[in-house]
Length: 112
Image (tube, rainbow, N blue to C red; front, side, top):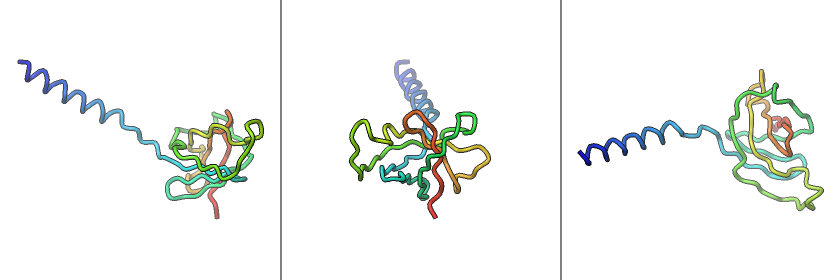
């Protein structure tokens, strides 16, 4: 009986870990001006253009690696806390994405 319960708990644990898999893509953020974001084998350049939360869809990625090539003082850093990456409504990710930085959603366009 104990063996059946143990096997059952293991199966449930495996099932739940599979259900909680995170499908977000990891992205690299470089704090140049403009900031460079690399995700999906694409390179994006961040703009000053801001979108609202109503203009974005689901989160598609997250910044997991920050390269600080430019040294900013704490109060002058335009790129504090880059984090989530979102799909913009009616725009393909091959053209632009939205990056959450400093409590704003900035558009990042594909680099050409």
